Length: 288
Image (cartoon, rainbow, N blue to C red; front, side, top):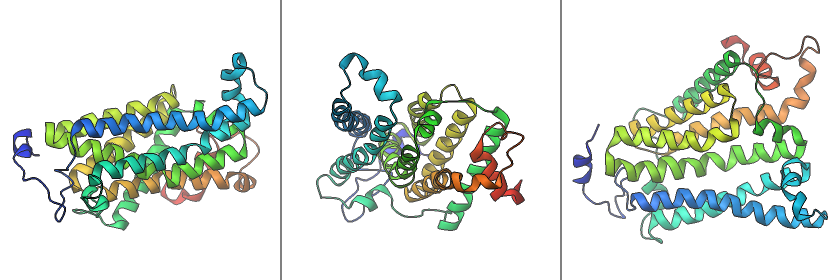
């Protein structure tokens, strides 16, 4: 792995030959975009939720309780996620391309990289998912904020599935393993960049799953492997694809769960990790 001194001596990239590991942006730009992505999530929720709450005649003193319990408000909060992701992508384009001077995808590393093809990435994603469900099985059942959101309404579950499949993997990988990792690699070297990005990504996701240690373990596993893949391949595309498959399979099961319940026995109740784990075991039972 390269030391900070070796990284600092790398030639500056050019628009004709961009280098994802030696990007035309710095650490503070990457950190600023990460913070901006969080701020945009909050702002779009305000834009979507406040008019909805006011249209329902909710008073200010009851607003906080309404926003976390009303199924319509929960749905509106989830619908606001893709617009926030699109705005983040726009800000990322400005930073990565330096307002059009560099190619966006090539500068981020939109190639498969060393040793990982499409099918190997798909296999790794399935292996991660199976390992994650194994962690859930061992840790046992636990209720968390995300589960309560998904149970609030069918519309909320579908909106969450859409965002988790089609926008979250792309935006999160660009922000954390595209922008932040690349800037840190040049500043502190590969090893510490892997550690810092892994910790930041995990820390941001842990609160929504607390205190479900099995789900947290699943997120930690995903974050660690994706960051290692970015470091090993020098490219971002494998990370995006693995993240997409990892989330997508779970969301497909989430969307299909009402139709697949007929295949599950009514008694005894589902195993500890819940319906999705049972469906996963039945669909991929040969591997268990």
